[in-house]
Image (cartoon, rainbow, N blue to C red):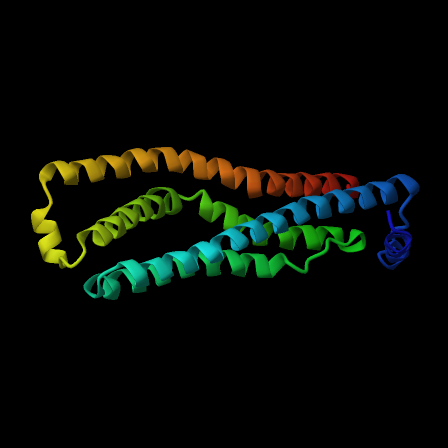
Length: 214
């Protein structure tokens, strides 16, 4: 524990007309330290998503430019830019809110409150029905359509769909359903490992702090 942090926490207790005893001071400093550890793990998860997501986004756009026929590019590239760009910007926006945050022991409750609110929005969205049942199936469907378009070569959209057999359409639908059924719980597991478990720790530290305030 840094001496300056101990000194500031002790000094600020006088401003609030509540001189902390040794046990309260140690508890507050311990909660602050554990909170910053959990917060740093969440920051690392955001950075991991961005470091992985940005090159993938650029790679997909470049591949679409290279391999797709022009008649497909005008449809797929704007959709890919909007969808993938929105996903990355959403992650970046949430990371930007907390990237410089340090949970100070002398301002523990407001810092924890704000941090929890900022992270909780992201976690709740990732666990929402919209993310599970709209975004994931859409990703599968969009990926399969891109694969078909690359394989179609010079055929246009109308010709591509007219030449598709019923069996192929059924197979694509089954792949989308089975793939989504696998990816939904997997994405929830990843979300829990990267974010939710650390968010739950922050909530427990806030509750612990509120208990020592009583």
